Length: 507
Image (cartoon, rainbow, N blue to C red):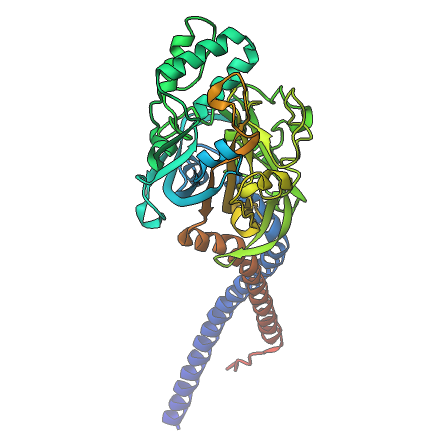
């Protein structure tokens, strides 16, 4: 009996200890579950509200990030791309070969022009003498260099080309301004003595473009200078002579960096310390024109935009045309229309020209009889191309246009095309020019082209298309995850509240 009592007591004690141990373990488990549920609930709330708020604010946040990236600031990626374009430009030069100069001068035939080229040059631009100013502008000059690319060219720089002798024309302009009979007599004497009796020259393509050549007329001009003031601003003759490896051709440009006002980034403030071209009317200055590398963010959404062209000391305004795609990136195409050279405000003192041709003599002290137009007199008055044979204007080949990225106005493509013409006319007192017709004779045109390289366009595609489109879904997924965590934690809280534990009390 006693033995049975002891066995019973021993069993009860063991069972009580087991129940107490189970109660303690359950209490510990219950405590751990409480903190886990609390953490799960807090994370769910954080994920939910962070996702909702960020999905709503992301467009504004991304826009502010892009604005900061577009601002020109030293030692940034934008600055590095601006200082030196990462991909070379191409400049294609087309020369006009005057095939019948003798027939034009002797029998009055229309000049027949044969287009030669393109002579393609790889162009590199580097900003030098860069200075950031206190008024949120940057001052700089451009070092430009060109290297001939035979593989892309149609012809070689040794090709012979016949064209007008611009020195004769300049000399004629100077003598006409003086209008003294004895000056003509003296000039004719020197020309005869030097055996110069033709107002045209035949030179190689290389000499006419960059290399330049020495003209004996320049020596005559020096001799004439001893008798009367005459100055021909040429050391050598060449359409682009002196520009290769030069930092002065574009002048000293001062433009806005976009700091404190991103809508001004890239706009020209002044050129050679002048905020406008005083020889032009106010609405024809280069105010609100871009220097060409950076553009205000909303430019692509505007009906028109302006770009400053140093070579013609003025801006060209282009109209919003249509949408296009380059390497998968949506862009807006801006094209120059017939109003660019309509001469509303670019008139010389002698009077306005017919639309389509503008004098370069208005560019500061430039007195050269050079006139610009679009290639082949595209969009110009018909009389210009009817005065010569060989002009075939074509929109696809001769249009001046630029493509900006749709959202942030980043340049995707540039196709700048301009033609240079020499105004020739008869001067009876100057024998060498007495039979010259009065026309605007095309001498060459060029096309500067740039298209964003594939590696840059892929990066830009990710930044402008992928991130704005897919990042909001990341925030929504985060919010959905938070919602699921909250639902699950709520279920655990309810389950915990309803469950009960029964512990056997041995007493």
